[in-house]
Length: 266
Image (cartoon, rainbow, N blue to C red; front, side):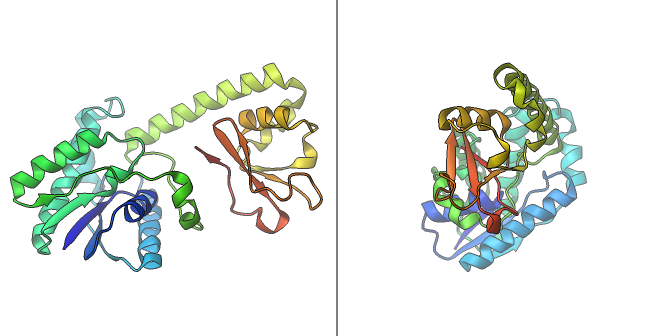
């Protein structure tokens, strides 16, 4: 039996699509997630995926206070530095110990599917812990393209930051900086349309945008980044699902599916 530590629902999907894991138990253990409401959202997303795919799963203890105490000294570390390494160690050690308790002979982690984590670092830590606890660590690269997992993510909560309080703060700062730069860009290239900035992160009707040249429309949408572009039947965009605008893919919405849909970044 293999114990698979799971960090989040999207990376769980990448893992099961990339690797065959017969007789696996999927184990959600992430005391790093802050705040508790965010933890509950990610836990429910994990359970939903497991139920949809008929996977065996279990939940570890959530003790954010213990995590905060252990990681207080690393709070100001840069993303990808010592704080992240210690976080990997904490979760993989727990996964190894839990493997022993349930008689699993092998353990691994969906961290290996994360597009923003160092696979070499995770595999190195995993092998060290496996040797220390006498349990085989199954390493590798579990990443798959986001397009491959997108069909399975319908109705599933997808997080927008790594997990801990420090990463949440950094995510907010980064988002504010991106918004500042995009607004300056909007004023520089589409000053007359600055009033449409209120649709940032919200769906906008195609008819509200006085641009019909597709190249210019894409440039505008890449700056505005609405959650979706609502089109009416008969529009030249009606039969399409996505409008690729640089690194930003804008979702094409019809009246029937405008609620709950969102644009996606690559």
